[in-house]
Image (cartoon, rainbow, N blue to C red; front, side):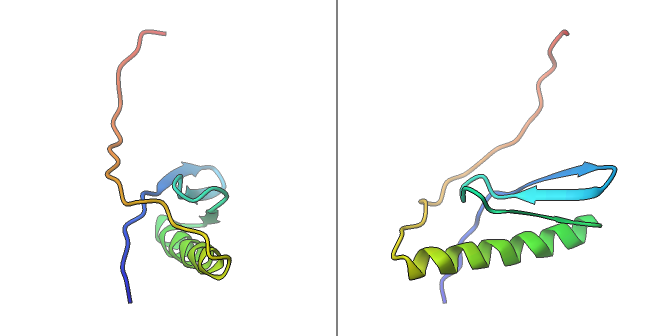
Length: 74
């Protein structure tokens, strides 16, 4: 079994947590808690990858992603 790291983004709002994987177009989910969102995005990624394998589609190459903030006068 091969293991891969996929970058994910998790956003919090009044309805819970929204998670998506920018490397895999259309791969997103939600959860009531942060932990739910993490488990749900793992499942969503697994299903997305399985579909790609079945369709003989390649996966994006591993890459490092850094998220930061910048201060901007508005």
